[in-house]
Length: 505
Image (cartoon, rainbow, N blue to C red; front, side, top):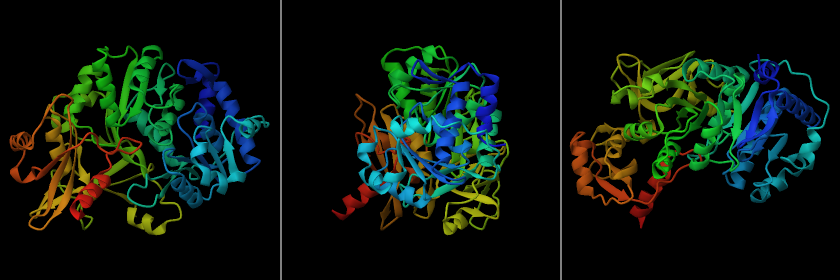
């Protein structure tokens, strides 16, 4: 079994059903998508051999599905790259992965001069002459591939250092696909997957489970996340679902509130992940958009699949469950361990580790990093968390984000949850700042709700009503916006840099 078989089986079952859409326009049926992928695979094989790496640097486009499945049909490894990276960062990944071909879009090409010069013989612009010629080559036969073969080289964002390529096999991604269908949402041929998050990451990976069930792939005309456009698409396409970062969920909720829109008629499920979803925001979004939410917790090293909270589990008044990341996923074993590697009892905080078929085999050409992440068969996530007595996991923070103040561990996520519940706070992120007396103290960066003027005294009082005194921030900084990555994660390193810069000036 390999990833191309997902498309192969769906095309056999639903040959003339719409597969790929640009906005409301049907672009390809399943039969056409399969034929196009196999022809493009033949074009790839004229320039590559089995096992080569094929890079894809593009905004969301309708060609994404054919390129993914063409790479796998050619027995190559796909290397999707965050299209918002700097030219030099893209080059670093291309060189590290030792790619044989680079597909990019006409829109991005002007921003990649160094990449284009360094890889001129290997560069193919999507939709232009070379690309169209590759699609005209006589089709390959569907491949027979070892499930252990490398399928996707997933590069970390690189926000904390040099990017590392997590090696994901066909078996890894098939395990992810099966777990998603088993645990998170039941998809079928009457569903649609709307790709508004980057297809180079989570949204592209969820393409697999929706292709496996014949759900149509919808790429917005904008190629990005426009809340109004997304809501409009959900009024027309059937059974709409999407993967969104929590910041995107908030933007969607605010758009619906501002326009007094009822929940879209066909909005089926929003899977959120990739950053903290605060309970207060989740309740607000559910009130506006309906009971459509499911949550996943995973990492690139165990793609999208460590624990999860399905839609039914969101129908609770228990804040502890809503603030958690749910239960271990199908086929994944999850533990919380101490510094010696010993499993801790429920209620105690430790590092989250996991193992299962979904976990990567290691980092590409990086044995040192592999040895640090994979120990005795377990993936060490670097995340801190605790189980309750029923096996529900709550994230506390990244291990590097834990603040030790006066000898006590403080988990910023807990304090952020409290501040987020204040009506005058729309966004908040907390980091530690070195302090000669306490070791570290908490600094809260706060984005106020429009129309509100919130003071430090007011937020202090709010914290003291909900958490221990020693956990409250020692300083509040009111900002217009928080720095985020392309995937909606707050960049705490950037906040630390702001503090360090202020301290040195």
